[in-house]
Length: 408
Ligand code: DNO
Image 1 (tube, rainbow, N blue to C red):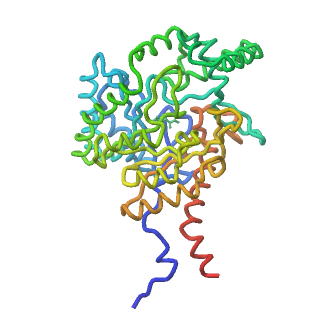
Image 2: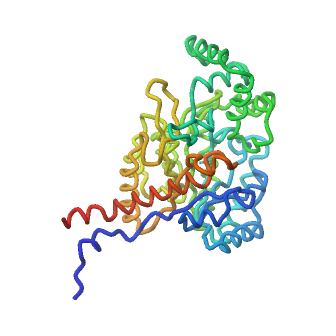
Image 3: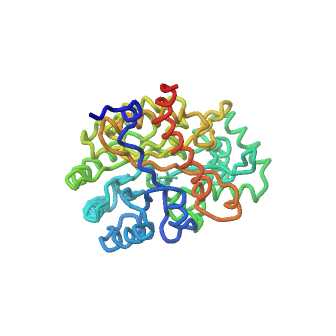
């Protein structure tokens, strides 16, 4: 008779499904590099299709074949973007919702499983520096609140912005502006806008102000209601197709440029979960985004959301203790989030659910040979390879470490 050894008892059957993000055929990091890093698959999107248009089956199949030909899988979309008209529930929102449902049918027909999206108005992620120097010479992404205030007040010159800042904030920003060269100001402007779709083509202040204008009458409660309406519109379709929706939190998790943000706190996530009580209405749990707030207890929140977490973005941030709201992206196992606690909770969730959860190391430092190459900010190859290796080692250690200790 076979008796189970402590090792077998301890070894969970379900482990994180290791993924990396790939931006498609134009990505400077090729699929081969991602495979060599040890990922089982990639998460990607059809970035060439304009936001709001239908993703056709032939286009999805073509991308899937490319990935499979490189020896990997594609089961998670990041992202199927939500058109601004849906977020504002104005203009052509109904047509875009219809298109979204058709896209869901098409991706399900091609065998994809998880659909990541976000509900951030206008801007997706925001940073003020994409080349923050770490002590050893590697570069990280950083968000510095004072610099963002400089951008808002003096570069973008957003009408009404002055009234949203205190006298002290205004003075600090004005002094900061004085200390910056025209080149530095230009770099800040470009960097702050990188989270805009199409930002590489460059936006003028007038264009950005025009985009913000669509949200003039939309406060947090209206945006929340619009998100609720979108979930009611699409989750039943996703559920019937066996797809899982995964909303990405706001990055950073607080309002910017007078725009509301409603996916930032534990209460925000709870409200979304309650809005449509179906497992298909789930989360992309991004520790880097949520971890930029001191009031988010990440391991507890992950455990609470449990069955609703369909995708994990593992990244760490180091908050600036002297400047609330400022942070930089630290090493994945360093920073303010206890990554071991997160992975432990994830192992518990996977055991309870009896399935793996897709995970990708979110961002990585620009380092070594990548310092001389171009890549999407946060998505150079070597830093992410390091992050994936560290996370894989962490998981391995958590799975087997206790057993080894118990044996000695
Ligand atoms: C940034 C990413 C986000 C994310 C979207 C999901 O690096 O985590 O751009 O893909 O917010 O819709």
